[in-house]
Length: 297
Length: 297
View 1 (cartoon, rainbow over the protein chains, first blue to last red):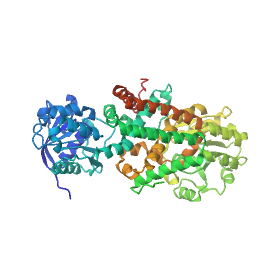
View 2: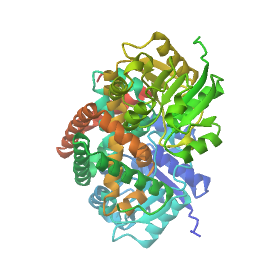
View 3: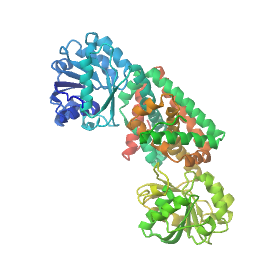
View 4: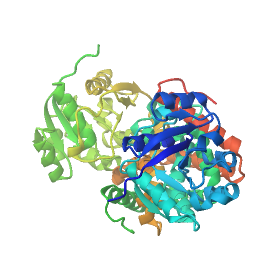
């Protein structure tokens, strides 16, 4: 049974879907007494306050984090340098800093650069949850329930800091695992960043067509679900694509090769090989959904 | 108000999700008295009979269609030549034949080749509905409710035959439109066939990776929805890809160009252009979902 955490003051930088849901989940578990919201958009922070997601709106980041026992960064990773610069030197001694960014190698580099004196208590994290909706009003307490969360601890991390961050995500209902920042970025380039890029590309292509009205008017549920993630925050996904550029470019190249091979089977045509490819894909997906082993062929 | 249709005997070739749901919807509307099921899999037909989807299992296609006022083909289009050959000469005079195939130019060609004497009453159709599930047990009466259905009539079609097929789909709750087989195949290559090919390619790529277990274990709801259509029937999608080969190859080429352009923006990196691309895509998708006009830029 995991130890139930309790922290007095939590500061959240970026009170949107991710940061707001973290607060709601911890409040429901009575795992936090007081939540301070920090962010660029006053209107969003006021909505968050009105929704009971945060207890206080910080005027500035330095005073917002000054009393915090835990600070969660939940902004697009492109904002990390500015945010880390603004809070450096203002953190309470012993405060634990963590984040929810979708890429981890760049976050580790930013932490080393901007919080060099605090790296023992900076524990990078990434909850594997989200919807295509953004902003405080999208937050809900169950977002992380039954989902996974990944921590990519630094070699110099205090064990107590890692344990605290783990226990907070567990209190949100998440199943927590640890891996290296490099492996994290490679895995998520393949199963998250690449699909987002592919979905944005398809919607952009259709919207750029002269026939866009006819095309969208006959697009149905398959198109809707395939492209759901293209309604995600453009700013966040620009940052992810650029933060994880090398791994994502590798995955795009592999994908283009896969698509070119499929194109060849259609052009030839090789009905048997095309059926085999579709069948293997379907079989693998069904095994995944059923929680079974993924067949190697 | 559309005229409520009534037909005495309906024969369905292929009693799966599409054919079975057509029967259930018409039965609920009391628009048909007797439904005969024809198919390759005796076990599937028996399930359909047990579920009340069909009233009788035909031993052979010729006797199955002999008394039918309307015949619906709802098998993968690769089976059309064999099916049309088997029923040619066995149709009742005046029987209307229609289909639910996802491609239309090839269906028109098959009809002209195999039912040359019956083309005045062969009305090609395509309901824009489906799920990734297959077989009689996947059928449900509401599948077509609020969805679109496209007819691509032949120049020689009897107006009464077109009107009857239209009224049947309307009785299923569908919104019916007409277009040419060529335009149909181009539109659906872009918004349906291409996304299916892209989803199969992604799942195949991940399943072929040496890291497949780690990759699938961290794949989340974005991946799940993006790849839902890769759980569709491999046989049906092989047939669609090959039937609509030229239009699909064009769309794959356009998509590869789009993806290469996005790759260039990531590699450069051009943060501003990448943000603009993602924002345009999101904006177009949101407009589509809201039923608003699609912005041209």
